[in-house]
Length: 248
Image (tube, rainbow, N blue to C red; front, top):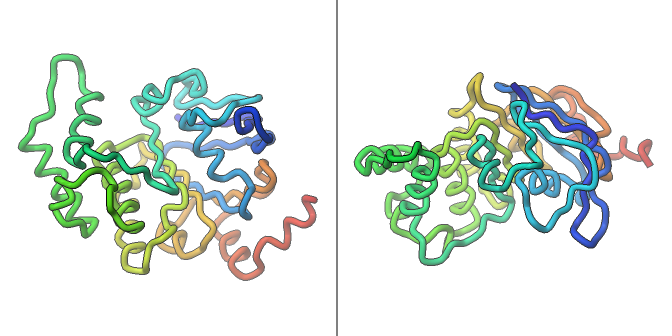
C-alpha cells in the first residue's frame, strides 16, 4: 500500500499555479524527504494533500492505499490515516491539549465506544515525557502562548497519539534548538514502522541527520526534478542548489 501522486498540479485559489505535475510514490514503511529552494512548492504540496481550502487542484491524482485522496473531505483524509505537522502550528484558544486530543481520538472510535479516561491520560503523559514536555501542558490551550519549539513538540505529540499511517512533517525543524531537534526527531524515529510512512519537508541537513530518509526528492518550480538517496542531502549541504540551473 502506498501514497501515490500522479501529475498533480495545483494553484492558490484564484491565483498563481504552484504545482506543475508532481509524481511521487511513498510505500508503507519508508521515509521520504523533500528539499528545494524557497518558493518551490514544498508547503503547498503538503497542504494540497491534506485538503487545505486555499488551494485548488488543477490536474492529476493522489491515492492513499487505493482510495481517491482528492475526493475526500479533510476529516475523511485524517480518518484514512493522513497527518500533517504544520510549518506554523495554529493556536486553538479555549480548548485544552487534553480535551483536543481526547476528542480527536474519540472521533476515530467505532460508534458506541468511548475513550477510556485513565488509559488516555496515562498514554498522553508517557508520550509527553518522551518529548520532554511538562504534564502541565495537558491543561493549556492548544499552542496558545507556546514558544515555537513547544508548538513543534505539541504537533509531534498529536502525531504520536493519533498514530497515523502517513505523516507529513512540514519544516518541523524550523525554530528548534539542538536539544529540541533531537527530542522531536527521537519521537519521529520511535514511530518508524513497516505500516507507517513519513514525508519530511525541510531545507536543512540537520534534521535529516537525525531522521535518515530512505529516498530524497528535490522539488523545483512545482516539479520533482531529482530523486536519489541520502547522498543528495550531502550534495545539497556542500553545494547548495546550483545544480538546478540546468532546470531553467
